[in-house]
Length: 337
Image 1 (cartoon, rainbow, N blue to C red):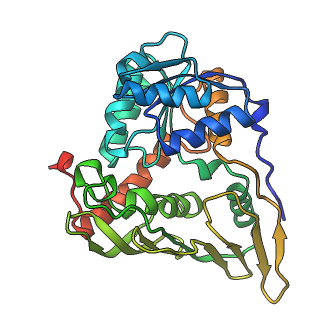
Image 2 (cartoon, rainbow, N blue to C red; image 1 turned 30 degrees about the vertical axis):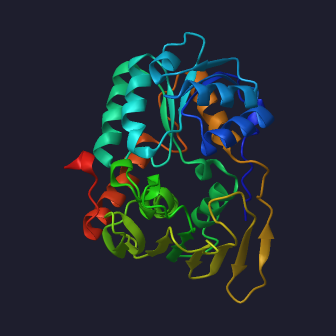
């Protein structure tokens, strides 16, 4: 039984980041990069200069810009962290890559698979690094779960459940209910279970989804069943209007793994062999975002254009699944019409 130790982010090379769009998620990224890595945030850009300036002051960032174009043209920046709404990720990533900057793009990487392929095509042409900031993929408990499966500790995996429900801002004027900003539960919350299923089981062979839409036409909640070639099933419930405990469970023929609490955040995991006592594996770490930032820094300094932890193909495959789910729910964003 293996517990995987992730590379210490403090050992990764230090690079200079530019933050594209200050906000809650960017605040956490900056805080944990500064606390746990050698990298530093050199600049921040926003369409609102005052907002960029305030963010820079709060985090001790040297330069603030009132446009994304100014940010990506800063010659001192090694890479761009894209943290605006995912409806804007496609345009922001292309802007950065066209200016010669590697990109780390928040989840959901783009609103659909076609947009992701656009970004990766340009990254390949430019010879530049691009990666989805699916931070949970880099946390120690994820590869430990995968190692238990690969080593046969669970026997044959027959089912995986992963749920994600949070009572988020249900303001009709807000981002989460706005189709133009790619609102809805799936791309904000459900993207975590979908990425988890893909990581453990690969791409599904069948996808079935039922759900409820808001008055604005985005998904409020959905129940999703995925079937996989080896015979396992993935089950997920996602909801942006109600609170869940958000655990995950991986069920095998000779053992089970439980991730109590919010499965995609740093956690210990519990392995229970068939007819045996639960064993807690200590995989929980402090912070979390520093691991994806460190991986990006290593790849950029090594001249790699994609990560082996979450490849371009991985990101596109997950978005093909979310595309299929949205098609069944009837959620179409204005950009796709």
